[in-house]
Image (cartoon, rainbow, N blue to C red; front, top):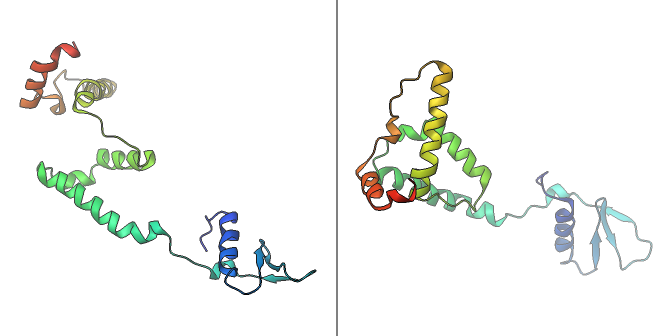
Length: 160
């Protein structure tokens, strides 16, 4: 049995398995006690022999395939180079996403453009200054795209 399974879950599992017997029994960490017989002896139970496939274990492969397909589609749809998936920044993002959990909501275009990008550029510039590499040049990530120009024309007054 998985060593990470809480003891109360192990006990409930033993109870559920033993309910199928004719006599009513309860589980303890040491073994099974026959409660129908007064002063009964404790019978040892090998908890490692009990195993039930969990729902997440059943769904893992299907769900992983679905996530892989969605990730691949996003790469293919926007012609993102495959080697991006091996980049440190992508791996850092993946770890942060995994640590955050399933409730993560993707930031909006507005948040990326007006909050995250300026913060990224500032951190990048500070790092370059610290390394003596400051050029004052615009980073490739901040070069305006046609979408940026349209966005700025429509909503530029929001973040000015």
